[in-house]
Image 1 (cartoon, rainbow, N blue to C red):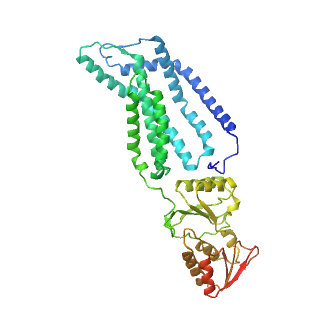
Image 2: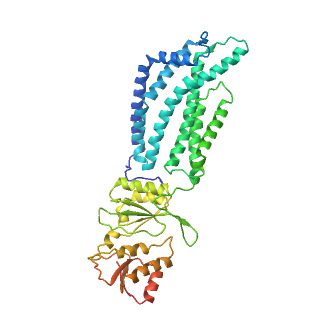
Image 3: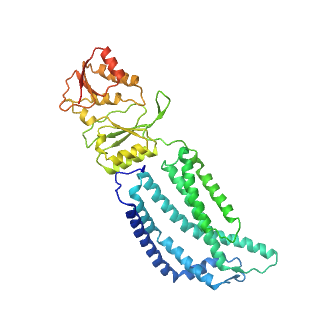
Length: 433
């Protein structure tokens, strides 16, 4: 399966995930049920306050009535359940975050928890503003129109509350869709290249939930609300949907000889103080770590950067690629990112007094997307600066190799570099396994 796996992921069955989800949902449902019963004792006072706010003719004589007692009883319990859900919101957020956290990258975790908080806050605020501000104003305007027609209005209290719940739900869905797009833009998760992917998922969920909540008694209302919802999301998300690919860490687009675009990131890991620090090549981004090969959190962060900024190649400073788990390296394959290492930990130990020249040579010898000719030019410049006469080379650093002042080591030199070294008369000694 081509699923992105994090180093913290565990190999568990789908049934285990379902069991955990069931436990967390059960805990939330039990809490909501308890809170619903508690709120049922005082929901009458809350409904009375809301209806007093929405009654358009309270100043003269109340014109609200209940035509169906059973619907009114159902509305009271629905209101108690909604308030119970809002009250249990913080606990539900913690449960959902705990369930989703192991499978999310750092930036996705931040976006997820921020989005859940925004949903809960907007739901509470919209319900209050709609029932105390917007609907009273709307009903008052409608009542004034009835007064001009010399009609004696009588309004159904149950229907008024149903409308307030439907409008609040619609507003919450729209705000939720807008907020996730804005948050994803702030965390560099969305840009022009994946905008359609976000549109499909956000609109599908939003319209499905909107269709469920729209009253069937009003023909055409769903179409109007759907157009309003999509238009609002497009209006607030136009910048995110049309934005360029995000950049960070000094990344620049590097072109190869065929015109292909590459993004190279240098993972400058000190490897617990054993790996020296050198400057990356021009155009490479750089992100620093202490021990990425040992720390799962640092591995997650690096994988997050690769996915977020569409890195095509990661160059490790001292970490040995084989030290990472197969699942972790598989994630880079899924993201179509090449992984190489300069092995600076080993190169820095080739001399008694190290000046990191072999480390600089390893960086200069990088190819793809750079051409072999440009790589050879960079390497020759360093070799001539240090007056080396003997060049050791091979596929891997030989154990016990100790370099003298006029000697150096190059791992896997390019054909172009070897040609220039032979032409210049250097002594070339090959080590093979």
